[in-house]
Image (cartoon, rainbow, N blue to C red; front, side, top):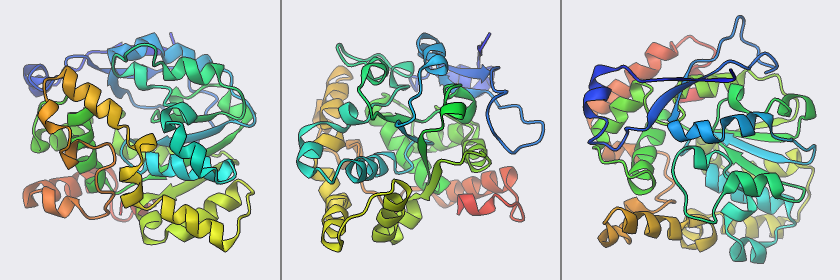
Amino acid sequence: MTFEYIDIEDPVFKATCRERNEEDYVLVRCNDYANVPINLPNWTPDPVCLSRRFEQIGQTIKDMEVRPDDVWIVTYPKSGTTWTQELIWLVCNGLDFQRAKDVPLDARFPFIDLSGLRDLPEPFNPLRDALAMSSPRFIKTHLPPAFLPNALWTVRPKLVYVRRNPKSVAVSYYHHSVSLHCYRGTLDQFVRSMMNELVYYSPYHKHLIEYSELRYPNMLSLCFEDMKRDLPGAIRQVCRFFDKSYTDEQLAALAHHLDFGQMRQNTAVNRRQWIEYNLQQTNRPDRVNDNDMQFIRRGETDGWKRELTGELIEALDRWTLDRVPKDSKYAALFQ
């Protein structure tokens, strides 16, 4: 059995999951991981918090064809995924800004595990679309290494991994969960669930550590905070990885396109139709123009300082220190 589905027995979760709209959450253990090229002695992947809907697609993803010219992006949620997707797609497609505006990012770069989290309106089916796409395909996932297709490790297409500071992730993921996953809890409740590894795709620290220890020769690792500090440098790094060359003027145009102010106004990447659909379905149409309900909110590196209480900041820092001591070689991943 490739995947094992384990009920969450945490008593607080069981008593309160319904009020937060988390009844479908489940822990999923992958038992087929022997071919993952990871540099962790006696590695056994932890169960991952997902939805029971993952049963409908997990094996299909595990068995899917992988092509040499595929481009994969993997992140823990809310780590700069959409921003990096747009960067990658444009670099690999001749900076075709017009097509990037005309064709939604979801169609250019499908999120293959989305239907494993939530019900989707017909005819939207990103996994089916990805399987049928002509090459080269651009594929997004948040899954940890053990859950990825077995063929990935032998075909070895280009893979980009992006990480982000845990406090920024926690705040952004909360707002994302409210707007797109109909989460009904508070920020405090969400952060504490994340620290208990009971939000989708957790455990968070293991996600970053496992990808940092992959022995995969065709992978580029990026950091959201580094990209914010030096976007032109990140663009050049991505160009080198994909063996693409552009003039300084073209690179400046790309940096302008990727400015967060521009990204928020770009309907092809901001998924406004999804926000509107979801708010209508959950009787919250009055919040359609609420900035916290937008897919691309602020894109800040320190916005968490305004939203997290001192108690939560201390708890998150302690959580990371418990998982990753200061003297650990992994400590730099979480700064």
